[in-house]
Length: 362
Image (cartoon, rainbow, N blue to C red; front, side, top):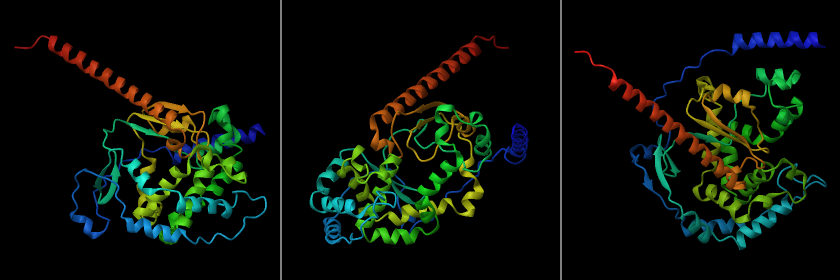
């Protein structure tokens, strides 16, 4: 047994160093236009923005919500494992049509300063704050069949800490879980316009498609409950706000296309997702996030990882689900960057003072 393991280990390490140990060169990517022709002349200035959805859009939405076709009953005992159950979606659509107040929600969203800018000829919205580092709740750098995952099948302690081993091994369970929950990604990456058309023309379908993810990706156990767990962490208004952003902007198709763009040969050949990140970085790891990358592997890409915290709860939609602990983690990170910056300034000051004290040649 150990002889076999040793041989596999040695061969794997040898192949890893032979194939994967090379320095990636950052590509020089020119700014190119790939949006609607009319946007070519658009201003690139950052401009204040307010949400103002025409009444006609809301009237059209309400008409489409009047007669949903949700008559197919779920299989007995299936809960949410087959997707969004029709009886539960009926309740949400009824609330959306009869009680959800877009006028109030729009006013709430407009309380916060918002800005719009044409970014590489795409009109995007942003909050105007200085970027001082990279903080992410999706620090992922772990392909299912990479060297370290295969090594961990034999010696998991060399790859992942004992308390987080269950998030990667047994490998077959981890791989099956990924296959079970990433079908949406394959669909959007291969036929984005097909799924986009289906969801753009039906708010009922759009709600089912999006909110099923809020249920399962918040906690995978929720899909085994008959009533799910959508309201464990969110209100219906909050959930429908998210759906409305896609509906009123008619952006489901363009959102899906982003997946397709990342799967093109041209994009993958650039290896952008493999490039090292050398700016100060922080990773907030939530226990119910679908994918997991251990610290050992993260540090291979995040070269200046100054903060890594495992959170007590939360899943994929962490900012909505656990806003307090998420915000606290960002505050801590910003504090560390500011302290780091002060220390660098002090070092520069000391060097300058020492240079000034040196005798000058005449």
